[in-house]
Image (tube, rainbow, N blue to C red; front, side, top):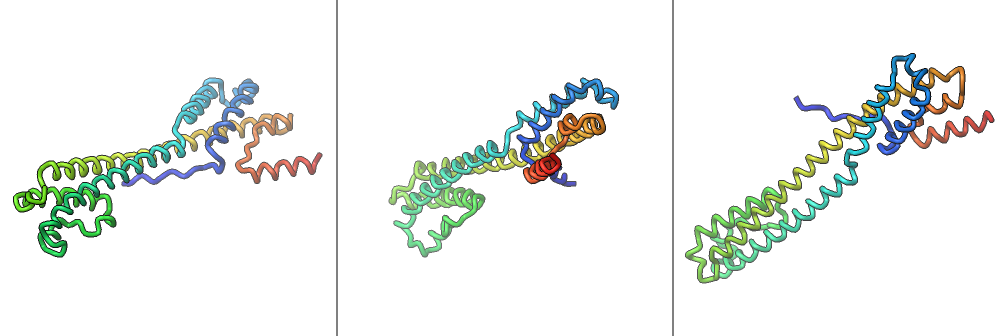
Length: 232
């Protein structure tokens, strides 16, 4: 059964989540005696901080997208090199056979510019196979193993670049999923800590109570600010 992708439980950036967690941990350390009355001790606080540190070290999406873009650019370059190698070989085939002939069509290079990655890989392999079958007939055009070998190497290089790019796409998907899962765990712990903090100071100290309030968006922060200003 396919695992369902996780959804973010918070609606602010990961960097803000981390900073909010670190800030609340600082307040909880200050109030640790009161927190212990809720069974929330210093050890749990340390584990929470360790989770924050682990979360901070996860690669963000900009970094992952950058890596993916680099591999995609290399794939495009490898594709152009393969197409160039195939065209060089097909120029020699066209010297011997009409490009409307069955012998020419057998190479299957029509509309090469519109081929998918998989189609282009198969095209490269087919060109090599057919060229070797007809190498004796095409020798007078300069077709030899060196020309064919260029297509072989270019096909292998392109296939490798495609696999690397697909791996990077998969790595990004996995990393995003991991980041969401870790972020949700942090958020859950942040909510627990903040609720305890608010309960501790609700009837005692409005400033310390405010220390544990979480505003999940700029809009909410603006609302809170306006409400505060209206009562002052």
